[in-house]
Image (cartoon, rainbow, N blue to C red; front, side):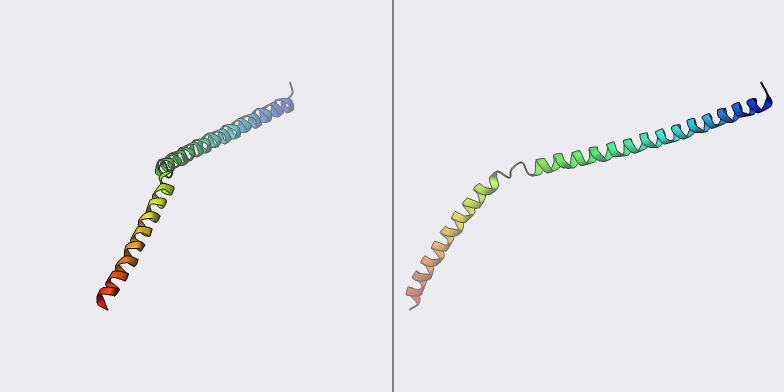
Length: 91
């Protein structure tokens, strides 16, 4: 084997080592980013579970609204009645 062939082999080995180092660095970055994404997805999942717990009783909103309307209507009837009665008493 000539010295030129040996030099080319050493260059190929060095290039291979550089490629391996770049691949290792890129895979390390990928693993780091995947862990960050996984952690953030877990945070979003926990937030969504909290939202689910906060909105679990929303089925009661229409029932409550109907009852509030009934209370307001009865209050209006009392107001009108007392207005008529007090108006007659004052005059």
